[in-house]
Image (cartoon, rainbow, N blue to C red):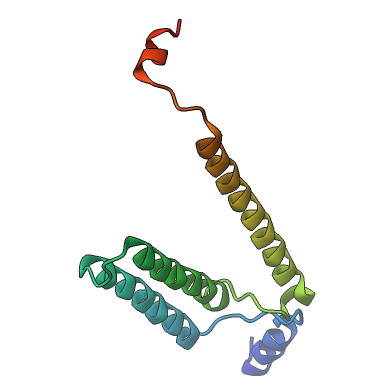
Length: 128
């Protein structure tokens, strides 16, 4: 094949669905952001920066959410243009289902813990 034939083939082979097909620069940017977003929480926990465990957990979760978005953008190439927006709609639907499942699970576990009758050692000895 000649150079012109290769160029014509490449032009025809391009996808017109709006999907972004990553470049080396994009992959390296995503990689370095992922490393930074992993190293900072690791340092925060190992360096015992926060005295309160809840604050440390919230900060680590924020870094985790940011890293999820970095992966979706730089590695999965999700945006509102790819495949007519259906990949973004599927992702939003998945997030909604995960939030409903997790919040429902936490709600059930909290109420089971709060509403369980306390059992003493004497009551446990009477069980069959």
